Image (cartoon, rainbow, N blue to C red; front, side, top):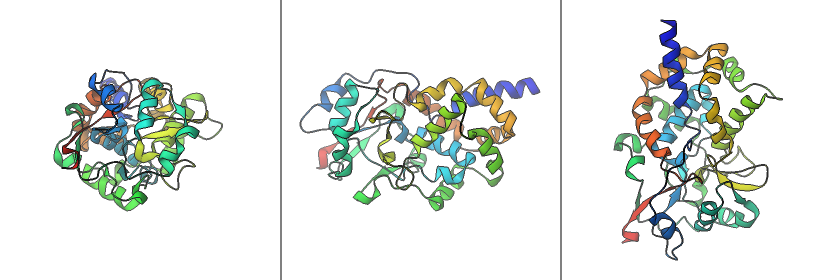
Length: 291
């Protein structure tokens, strides 16, 4: 029984942290690069962290870890400014934020609000779950707005989380450690910080874009090559199994995996995350251009 539990747990933890949302690079359609450089942008680009299945898996993990941390996930999504997309496609590991900050500090509404844009088929989710993911912002003040504890509690209920799945404060602190942290704990901690860089929780909030600014001052996707949420990948097997066992929350992870929407979301999240370029970007298809 013990061996069976460990086998199941390794499999679960290997995929639970979809915060490493761009583990493997896969090619987008060749038209993506052409469309991104057109003067009249026909499509919108986001990071995988804003796609329905991956966002909801991230939420599930963060909420059982610490509801207040999950409440700092973005409430709304915003398309990445096209000049930033163009730069990241050429420089997946980041572009100087100083050169692009004006696109974030003075956004122009994020494009035509009347047109409908759709995720690639492999990133789509059934409507009942897709409606739970962040919708595109309507007002500028919604950009990088945190989910908030009330909406986080509602979302947790809809996804099947109950109070007994949530880590105690001691279990959570055991998982993330205390500074100075060993390298593995620091990677995990920084990844969680990158995902929750909303207003009031980050010096440069970019959560609605699924971006962050690294220590070198470069803006990049949170799952770009060598970003913390990419590097946390190497920790998803034995390391997290050992941490969960050491900190006493192994059973809670198993309950989250079996008693919430996690299994259904996981099937689609894996395929979606593999469709991103090395820059870890997902292009939507927009219909009608507002007509």
